[in-house]
Each structure stands twice: as C-alpha cells, then as structure tokens.
Length: 435
Ligand SMILES: *Cc1c(COP(=O)(O)O)cnc(C)c1O
Image (cartoon, rainbow, N blue to C red; front, side):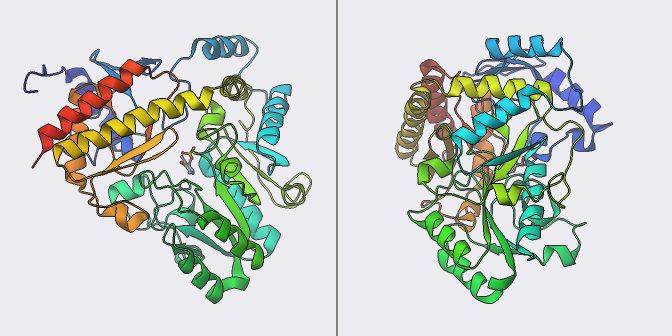
C-alpha cells in the first residue's frame, strides 16, 4: 500500500493558481475547489468512457460523471457523432425545432404526469420556475422543502440545503431577503409528522412541497416506505402541489423517473442532468391545466434565449434512446450492487465505522455509525475521515465526488474491471485511514 507511486500534479497546481487569479475561488461551482477534502483540485484535460485524464496525464476512473449527467459515460461515440452532425447545422436558432418536440414527446411518454413540458437550461431554472408556477396556481406563498434537499441555487431553496451548501456548512445564504427566506419551511427528510405539523400550522398558505424522491444531495438517502405516498396524500388533502425534483433521479433509477418506480403522480416534475446527456438542459412539466398557466398561454412568465437549444436537445434525444434499450438499467443495477456490496465488505473487514447507502446506480459511503435516514444523521458523518478516504482513493486513481454529501454515479461505461478495481482501492484506502 505504501508502494503507490506518487502522482505528478504540478500542471494541475499551476493551472489552479492561474484559475484563482481570474475565477472566483478558481472554480465555477464551489464543490470543484476540493475545499472539503483538501489538496489541489485536479484540472481535467479530457475524458472517455469511465475515465478522465487530468492535465498532468493521470487517468482516473470517474464516479462523478458530470454529477450523474453522463449515465452513458464520457464522449460516447454515437452521441458525439450526432452532436457533430447537429453542430454543422447550427448551434442555436432562438426558434422552435423538431428536436424539442421529439425530446418533449419522449418525456411525456415515459413520465405520464408530464402532460406538458417546458425546457430550460439548468436544474436551478427548472425548480425556480416550478415554484413560481405553484405559487401562481395556488395563490399561496409558502413552500416546504426538506433539510439536506438540494434544488439548485434559487433564492427560495438555500435554507438548510444539501450538496455544496452542506459541504461548505452554509445554513442559509446571505443575499436572500428574509422576507423570501421566511416563505420556505423545512422538515427533516423521511419525517412525515414534521410535514403534518407544517400543514397544521400553515396549511392554507403552502403552495407546494418540493422533494427529491430519492435524496441524493446529502449523500444518498432513500425514502422510507410510505413516506412519499403520505406526502402525496397530505399535499392533496391541503390543496398544495407536490413537486418531484427528479433532476438526479430522472432516468437514473429506471427509464422515466422515481415517480414510475414508486407509483406516485406528482403535480409538477423537474428534470435535468441525464436528459441533457452532458449538455445544459433541464425541464419542468406537469398536468396540462397547470402548465398552461405559463406564457404564452397563461400569465406566469418564464423564457430563455437558449431554452430547447438544438445541440443540447440532440444530446438528450440520443441519450434517452440508448437508455430505453432492454436490460440497460439491470446492467447498471448489477454493477452498482457489486460495488456497494464490495464496499460494505471492505468496511466491515476494516473495522472502520461506516454505512453504504444505495439506490440503483447511486451510492454513498457514509462515515457514520448507523444508517442515515435524514440530513441530521448524514451530518454526523466523520467528514475528516471522508477527506482522507477521498485522497487515498484519488491516489489509487479512483475519482469520487469530493464531498461526503454527494452520491457516486455508476455509468454504463464502467466495466466489471473498473468496479473490481474500485472495490480493491476502497479496501486499501480504508486500511490506510484506519484509526
Ligand atoms: C443538480 C440538481 C439541481 C440543480 O441543477 P443545476 O443544473 O445544477 O442548476 C436541482 N435539483 C437537484 C435534485 C439536483 O441534483
């Protein structure tokens, strides 16, 4: 184990120094700065399949996969070919194309609750727009979100949020007017009674409950049995809308959304990541009479210069076509299970306290004593131990998300050998960090 050759990182170091003189913190999204794990962030040169190369020429097996967007892996040959073809036809028209219709039809078919769809360019835009619509449609102002849930960086979502805010320990962001922040109510994930209490106290004022059906931004935390269906009942009973934020779970757990798996029909759904195949695409949609309140049919305004961008639509269409093939999700499930089981075995052999949570091809190794059902439990993780683990994995050329509060993403490009090597690296890394 001590025999791992030291990697060259001088070019990444130099590039990051340069980045810090021009980009805020050297990055365009906080978690990329490696703040939670220390060390110099690797600067990426290129990627192919399940591998990324940094600018020093080191190759890593990648479990970030653009935060799950690349379920087929990097630079998939047929998708890059399709993109080259579209590229030559123009990259943006600011007018409607048949590509948008085609991708929307695919969504409508696979997620029947999305009777009407609107494309936007980021998950943040999708959730912000969905909440605006929910407020307009109900004439109410409050929204309920769950602690540790992440719904992008819209003002209303920055209280007790997951992902980068969890990583940085930011409880709420300055710059969000108190008057707006007060309209966001929080409940612990998987805590139905807390949601009931919010409805008892604010029932007539709650426009919507927004939830990641399988929480994946506080680390991976699956819903307890019945939790989502009870939230569905409660919202219906109180005249509030239910928004499923499926930006990660959409087309991740099965073809369609978590809503297909759980048999629950939300009023509104947000999608992103996978539906853009690595290009900037997101969407929101829902029941027709709701969605038709959006301009141009209704008064709720929402627009976008690059919305429905043809290059991005093409990436989405080509990606979804491949996800629809027989056995696609079974194969992902099989590999992710081998990885999770291998990690669990490695944990128990090492004597290091930890817990591996998994849903389909999403998984997190929490450095906690017990299982994790909510954000409070996730936050009890030993994040310093996670940081050491991350660095040990990186030395073994396995790139996992640089935060305890993110999930690993297994893609179709990960081969059995990648999974085997990752389990071995995990075993060695746990041995290296054993107290
Ligand atoms: C990534 C994510 C978002 C935000 O999407 P961006 O494209 O980063 O703005 C919203 N909700 C969930 C559940 C996400 O995972």
